[in-house]
Length: 303
Image 1 (spheres, one colour):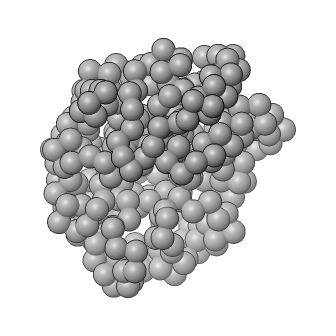
Image 2 (cartoon, rainbow, N blue to C red):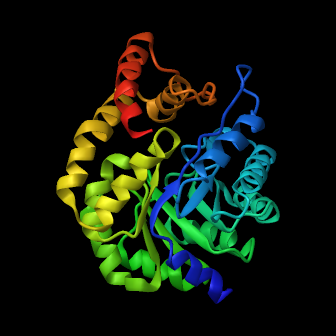
């Protein structure tokens, strides 16, 4: 693959902005709000931006909608940073979406796990290999949910997929991640991807960047977390975690389906357009919205 593209991904450090996908009340795409939100996010010095990722509700979108989201994001970014596009589902859909994302101007493909939770290694590797071959773009794998890899599996997969250049951890198991990183070295770029609440552990084991849901609410906070993590200033990092991050993630964990709906509700409270989530995600209860509103008053310190 293009070695300059590989080198560009290897240099990404700090924070990936991770915009939500806004919907109108009838659950149709709100591309105008998406472009407005992405334009504002891209005014901050994130190392890249992820379009139609997990926080962007990839699995609730059609392939046509993913293409529209990626295209709108690329347009709004205006070359200020690379755009990473999510794909997943299964082999034919994953390949189709990767091709669409490349045509829409994405700079990198992020492959989420396929639908089948019991896939053998050979079948799982064939899925990623097909997505990798779908375009000339560098490939980043998101190891989340049931897609758990050993250090040796990562090495074998990198052997099979030449354009695999980056690994986004979504397990939060820093012991396993550290072993994976030590076994594979600088063959791949290493990113933390489970959540802002995992930032201390991620930077302690040496990731070079992380993907931030909080980038939707308070970009300055996301950047401050990465700055503290990269400089190993854990006193500052723990202060930020205690005041801002842990309370928000504690609220997100009150119910399944809150991981995006709480962020969208918080955005609306801070004056940004996000809209509802699509099922099977669920909206926050009135009581939880009241607590979230109180917390957002604290977040205004970081706006």
